[in-house]
Length: 234
Length: 234
Image (cartoon, each protein chain N blue to C red):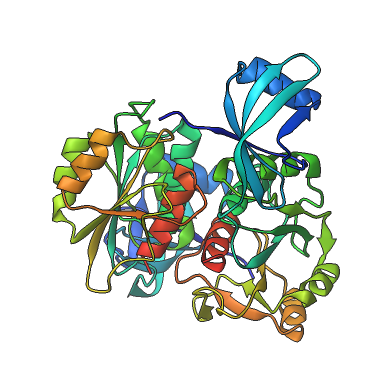
């Protein structure tokens, strides 16, 4: 069975689409070597999608014709999960963005915490990774990657969530088993390699965050992020 | 709070230990720059551990003295989980070994399936990764990394498990929520990038494996392995 390629971009999903994005045309013609007749799935990034046939593919323009109806995407989670993640080493941050997207995250806020070593993240690269992971995992939306925030700003952002959890590698804490069914919007705070500072832990308790752990084994930040997002989108 | 370094090696955890392993001595003296007086945790790889003080550290020998009693490790999962994982690209295989160890896997069987592109794995390297991840996550045992097996041999190995699950990226299948409480020994089969062949799917059904998915989003093999092991060790 041939796998159908899937793309997410801003479009109205009309019966015919003209594509003029040079990077996309290059990928189609030169990397994936599409020919007229190729069938692809297009998603508008707002949870609607349809299958199209490539009618023509030239250097500056491609024409697509829709096959069948526009459908609602069925892979988006019901719950809106925001990951507040202390910035990790570049390759770990990239891994988390890819896997968090597969697992259904809606927003990622890179966090500059007291023990964060890296203070910046390459946002364009992270957004590309999120888009590609959203396309490949069949999602209907691309997660939003925020500019890095301080802990204070992140806690203010998190006030719109019905519940927020902060993960501590401490087996005596409550074990995180997932989110209450009624909570449609939640936040997860994952610390840096060195853990949270005592001031941060206090700050988070003042803001009514739930202190939880993922059990007796000490998980790295990347692993905790992946697993906790998976549990939260169920 | 200073993090205590943790090491797993074959030892009887007596009141004094002499260490002659050259690689370990090099790491202690040159990489971690231990001085006499440093306190470290030693685990025997059979779920017992104790804190020791470095009394002397020379080029060919180090002497350690135990502080306090030998304790049972508390981070090992109750359930014995074996991951049968189609060999992925090198970096993805390494990622799975590290994360699966953190999440509590007991054995990993690299699998040569019909659509596996790589047929071999660097076992020494994978064993090093498993050992380091076991040390860092606080485990009492290092997962066993097998030689690669064919599907037939893996299915024979899996007969000793109380239940085996094979993961198919197909939303219509049963969603995997974890393992029955009574099942102390389970196996998880994760396919290669191209998925299982039809023959393999039939073969697995004949062997009474449960066909399951992880939900509507298509997870990469690495992500499916990490999440399914975490769910299985709870």
